Length: 152
Image (cartoon, rainbow, N blue to C red; front, side):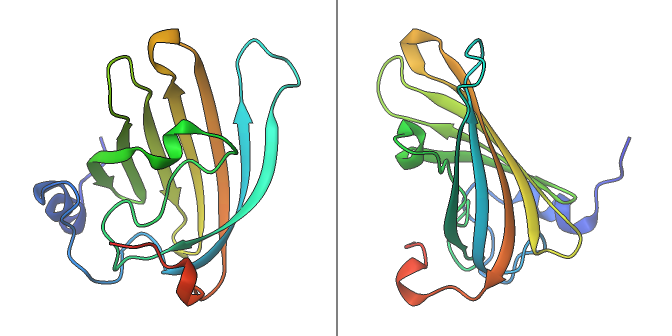
């Protein structure tokens, strides 16, 4: 079993969304170019692909600007809850409002250089019980442009 670092243990003890406003131990704040693939099971060749540019900001409330990025994805505007940090991995639940609402588990793994990440968002689309997975591969390409910085 992996040993929990002191920083990870501290992060687990802090309530969701209340990480201190300091540079993240996981990533370097900045502008990231992200390759996004949305995969729908049982539909061979139906994967949608795109490239997005986002600002990840450690001074922002968790999840720091990380979210579903595929086009027309209802999960993009839902709340992140139950933030968990372990080593170089950040996970959180994405919860939409309403009965039979969509829900997801987001997992982001950051490389030790703190400038590259791989993400996976496993989604269940409410009452339809349809599942899909969005994968992301992001790399830091510079500083955030002021209008890209996520709001608190």
